Amino acid sequence: MSKGRTGSIPTEESDEADQTRRRKIEHIEICLQENVQAGQSSLFEDISFIHNALPEIDRGEIDLTTNFMGLRANAPLVIAGMTGGHPDTLDINRRLAEAAEELGLPMGVGSQRAAIEDPQLENTFRVVREHAPTVPIIANIGATHANAALDAIEMVNADIVAIHLNPLQEAVQPEGDCDSSGVIERISKIVDAVEIPVIVKETGAGISSSVAEILESIGVSGVDVGGLGGTSWAAVEYYRAKQEKNEAKAQLGVEFWNWGIPTALSVIMVNRLTSLEIIATGGIRSGVDIAKSLAIGASSAGVALPLLEPAVNGDTENVIAELQLFLGSLKTAMYLTGCKTVEEAKLCPLIITGKLREALESINIDSKLFASRP
Image (tube, rainbow, N blue to C red; front, side, top):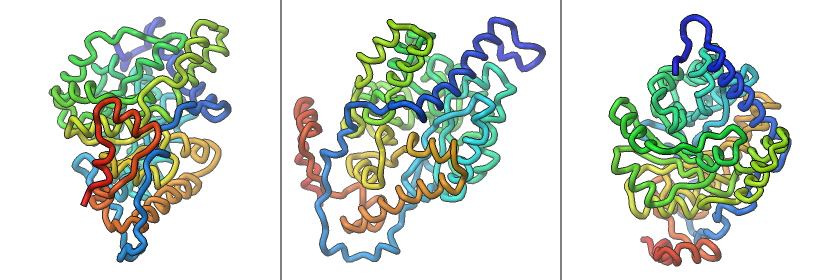
């Protein structure tokens, strides 16, 4: 498909670009106005730390800095890709980027397909690098549009590129594309073609150990598990289908609202069988969740929905304040477990109970291993 960088965009392509652009703003409106939370939890509530009454550290000296895909980050917290691709999203991404730069946190952008189809929208993504010149930036393109990866990288001068997988969303989306044939080969070609790390991210249904093994075998550097427990994109598309009076797709949204692998389970599954760097995204709602993510194998955790409202209706300071709540909570969890660094937090002993323990046992993973760490 021609990107139409010179001259006018052909009518068919223009219609597709208009649809993509319109969908971007509909997603934001629905996430702010409707209940799009998954009914199934991320299972982080089944993970408990062993309290250390003698931490023997100064909370003020806890160091959150970490290595993120070979780059420095001030904390193991990623501003997950949310938006871009509609004129109204420019200020949202600007506020998020300013917060990322102020706090030294990695940041992703939303799917860049809209700007690939209509270059006039590139500024809604370029604004991120303009306002976050020193932090790791993650480009984002769908697996079915992976041939546009180089353009997406250049658009935001990215340090990392994420190829997103969203078969569940596409299956429920009124105009969804459900042809996933050849995706593995396309991702492999991107890995060979680019000189920056390639990660693969799910968008709310999680990544299994078998999928992670395939991705590792083709040279992918990491995964963002995007697990079940946060925003349900089946739910988001349910509301869009209802607006369009597409009852068949709306019914699918109801049936698959809670489909997927809970985030905590997904992280453990991926970590058990691969050496991929893992970002835990999906239902991260506190710094304690970040600490738990580190302790079960993630290198960082991603946050999206909690930042959307302050980024849309507030200003940069509101976004920073929300992020500082996460960071303060993470530091307190590390203090109460006697962990002075992120690397120490990754070895923190845990007690795993409930549904997560049952799920792990069903796939022959011994949850007691997490409690027997030094």
